[in-house]
Amino acid sequence: MATYSIRQIGDPVLRERADDVTDIDGKLAQDAHTMIETMYAAPGGGLAATQVGITKRYFVFDTDDGPKVAINPEIVDTQGECEWTEGCLSIPEFYEDVTRPAKVRVAYLDRGGKAQEIEADGLLATCLQHEIDHLDGVLLFDRMERDERKRALKQWREQGS
Ligand code: NI
Image (cartoon, rainbow, N blue to C red; front, side, top):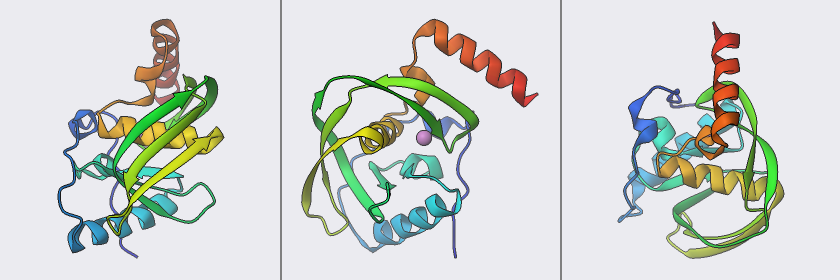
């Protein structure tokens, strides 16, 4: 089983904005397959291409519904607000509450190039927003209030040393 190594916090690729996918070709299919294996091995519920050093706009995810690939994803609608404890495969041992829209509608292309739209709430809504953030170079602590972020990062650094 081939897997990628997951880029960790401090790697500049995690701060890059990924480029739109223009060709859904065999290379992307193969890379996405390896990303799915990498996500399961981690284990995690979502993995963005940038997290394995591929600066293309797609991610893989599975919140108990089988593996899916979302290409050129876009949030087209949001509703409400909720707080969820998030972690990230690129920031080991960091788990913090993040407030985001509670419901989202996301449009994307599937691995066959077909336009899809999903409405999500709960864990899936959080997962989709977190992975789309990765494609914009945004990490979960960027979504925290300034004071909360300072406290959380200080605590995280101390526990890691
Ligand atoms: Ni992440």
